[in-house]
Image 1 (cartoon, helix red, strand yellow):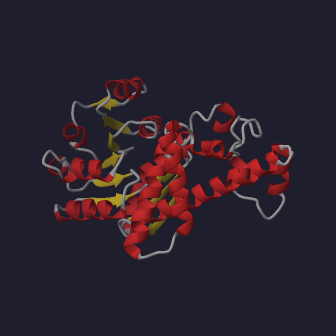
Image 2: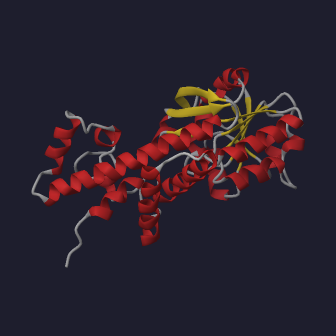
Image 3: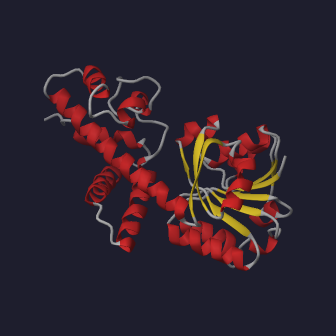
Length: 297
């Protein structure tokens, strides 16, 4: 078992760190939230008073942070932890950030003799708790193989996408497509309801027809069509609109940098930002269904 430093114990990071503890790894965690630290401590993790303290002597340093600026600051900032990380450690950043920031962190750590991979995740909070996440990794193949020691205890699908930054690109491509599928499924279901169809019957029809997709199969956005999904729980839990809007912003930035044509992605971002600005940012992203509902009066 390995000695692991885990930095960033939010809705995703906390359960991931706990799964590493349950797998037998020696985990030292740090987060700015005392409550988050208390939760992982109760599960058997050691807690540090700073990120720098957490990484000392670690074989793996894992981070799960909100944005590129936070990852850059953690590793390469004025108070960055790079100087405290062992030269034989492997740094694994699981945050979803822009590819350029991932590459800057990778280059900065490499210049100091420290190995780095970007490994954003897919699977949501449920996957984090169940240990069934998908990890999309960018970096050297040898580092990817080494990372399996810990990634395999937090997820069941591990993909090597390419060089550093490739994990981030693949992740935002996936989430852009997911947002488009969710918007399309929502408007199709609502059109059916508006024309007198039962959304459960319509969903069953489309599941056996050419409109079949992941959102219909596993994450139906119409309330009370499918049990145990956010739409049947007031759109609570799951993947927040705020996070989807963020990822679509990253996708738009990547598209601009590569001169890619993404009209559907741009439209999906516009719709999600409008939904976010209407006060729905903390709801699950399937709540975009509400955007198409007929309003009373």
